[in-house]
Image (cartoon, rainbow, N blue to C red; front, side, top):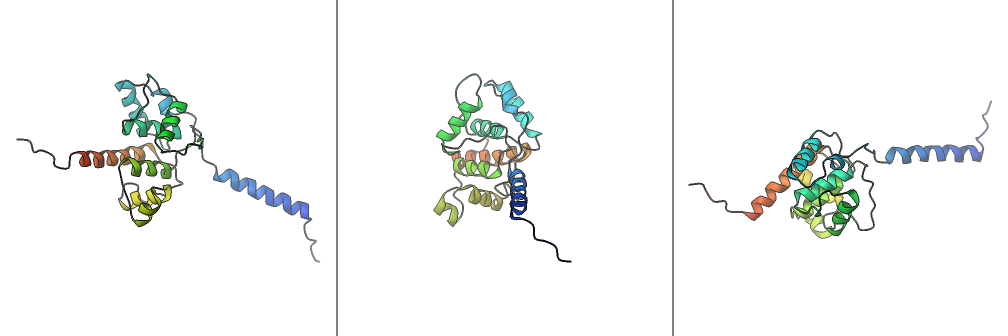
Length: 187
């Protein structure tokens, strides 16, 4: 006995269902809170509490990444407490995030965004493709993979607090070595 073909409406409904499932599976996870919302103040104690809170996170939000990058590269906007809107605007002015982009503060941050900013700020030129195209997320991640700063990571992955602290530490080391290429010996 031959089976009858599915009606066109049933096929469309099935295809739409599959597309909805795919779209839902491709969206970024959203975190409930950000460490920067709790410890985003300008004093030294707040900053240390921020770094301590960040270190233990299994995934870091866009809010926390932007706050950490601004702190790391000495470009924190002035004020007693920074909010997401102020920090996002500062990141956009520095070319870290596209001016027309509107990332959600609670979404998990992508390795690609972090790698791109690290390459810009640490003046990592990369290979021929990155020199030609600039520090795109994909090639920035490839370069940091090559340098073993972000081993075996891809641009779309989420980054943990420990991974973020490790790559920021390496960028700071690189910048301090550039500033003082001939350190003085202690006598």
